[in-house]
Length: 91
Image (cartoon, rainbow, N blue to C red):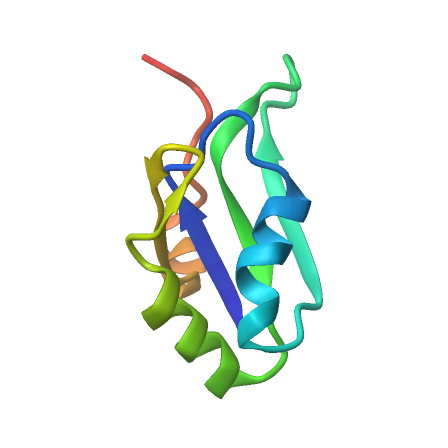
């Protein structure tokens, strides 16, 4: 299951997310998104967990968790495929 993690601090890394999610089960991939042009973090990322029950437990357990002073949003990423990716652009 693909999981969206939002409101990440600019210092958040793939390893930070791995440490949060692995207690819930196996983590296949983690990708903290960065701006293509600047390389700066966009404040969100994705975690892929192969076991649906573990992924749902992680979502329930981690939504609202503090990471580096920011309250993380954690939910299933199905909306991302349906509605389109969030943008790094600041208007």
